[in-house]
Image (cartoon, rainbow over all chains, first blue to last red):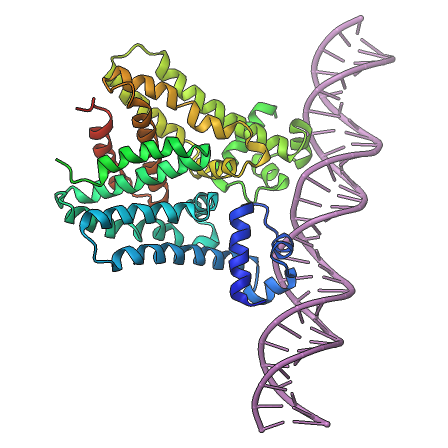
Length: 182
Length: 182
DNA sequence: AGGTCCATGTACCATTTGGTACATGCGCTT
DNA sequence: AAGCGCATGTACCAAATGGTACATGGACCT
């Protein structure tokens, strides 16, 4: 089995089972290899964790890149942006927030993650806000609030599992954030 | 050392060091006792974790109770509410999000936490929104979005440590959410 | 055919883990 | 003083952990 497929399976394992109790052996069993192989490919448990985090970061960048590459009208790009934020948060489920909590604690395997979780998304969003007609001096706070609200809703969704309620709230979010203010 | 003080110290230890690598022995050393004592008082490691979670839940309820008990005008009660939400999220720092992530995964020690993190706060907030003049049919989604935005901002704050930026956005949040709409 | 490199399996190691058995003390009641 | 129950210390256990040593296979090159 290739290193790449092992890594992908490991990420999936983490998404399903969380990081807390993930021993090399349990991961290995879950992805169909031996713990010896994981060490062989990733050097150590920390090395594996770091690679998993790197994968998550890359996925975030990839999801955003598609938005930036398009040449859509502002309104549609706006909508696409929020859909990508949602995907980027939900794609790994609770793992997103578990990793974020680790990043807040500066755990060794989350080195660049802390900055990435915000900085990858915020500058493009600010730009988007400005193009949508929000005054340039208000755009940063506005964007930050929007990103925060969005993630808070996804936090809510993952906790309650109540998609309908979030959809409702999400509609309100759209009314507040995807249209130019005033 | 009493069970209560041990528990308080354990919560503090978790807040500082996270849950992931918290062995009975490391906790014991950190709070100045032996791992034998922790088992004696809490039955098992899981028992200790469950008590820690229960403590966090109780703290959430306590912080909210003060708001509900007051007889302030709506605007001031509103402001107090948001201050308490902030405190309740930040009081244990990253632990709030780490525990939340565990709750999303239904880990055994987080039984009632999942519902509590939302349900303790949402009904009073809906009530508050209605009294602030928001139409009753819009209040649930409105409240949910407000709570989500608030937590998303605190998520942002804990990740970046950039208080100023969050304060700015928070001001915008106030403009949007603490005043009656329309 | 021989050699070389990567992938993999087996076996092992010291350490740490959660948990238990048992002894001991200390304060309380009688 | 005797007895009793709670709190605590010491010592231990089997299991699991991350990591290593070493052998082995098998593909590919010369």
